Length: 98
Image (cartoon, rainbow, N blue to C red; front, top):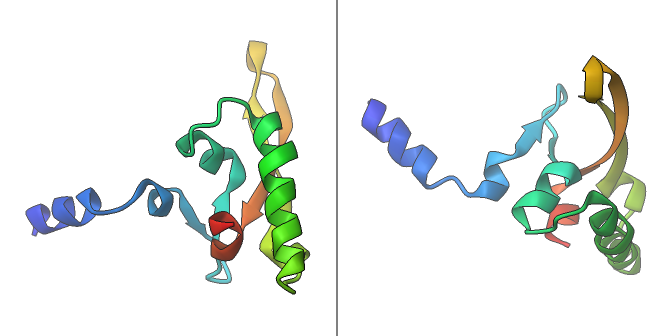
């Protein structure tokens, strides 16, 4: 049984590994996690270029951008234990593929 679980985990993609499921059962992907596995080095570049392009493509395809790209804020620890609210965008599967 343990070998089966290890085999299953071995076939999980990085994309599926960062998937989050909310209390309503909706899958979402954190853009802050996604940009790293896509090879981007800076959040601001990913947010200002890639997310904007994907949002525009979503809109051009007749999808509601607000349903596919949900702004979120997550606490992150900074220097000396300070906690700041970092902007994130929760993406639907469709938005993440865009």
